[in-house]
Image 1: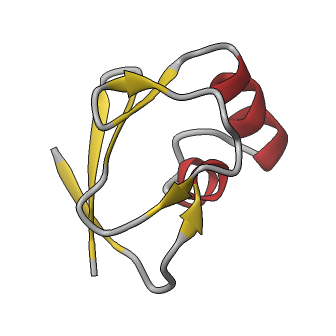
Image 2: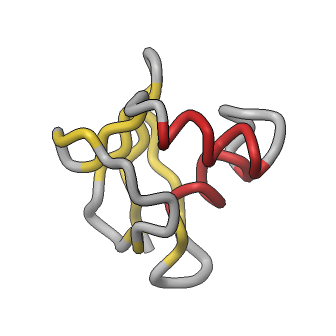
Image 3: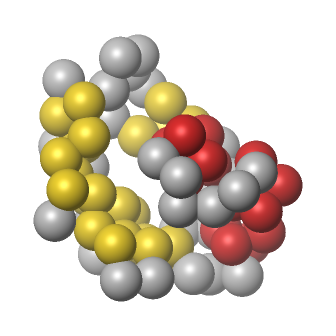
Length: 69
């Protein structure tokens, strides 16, 4: 589990995947979300612009991120 400090709240889900280096581009992040490969707070998330806040947990592949402020 990796803690990620948010500099801006809320932040779009696809931007977090991109800026944390889990994917190589925003387009790749959006495709991963559309393909149901991402979970937010334990539930599959298909909204690319889902607003992520402190306390949310993102699971992508074998990486788990916990958002903090």
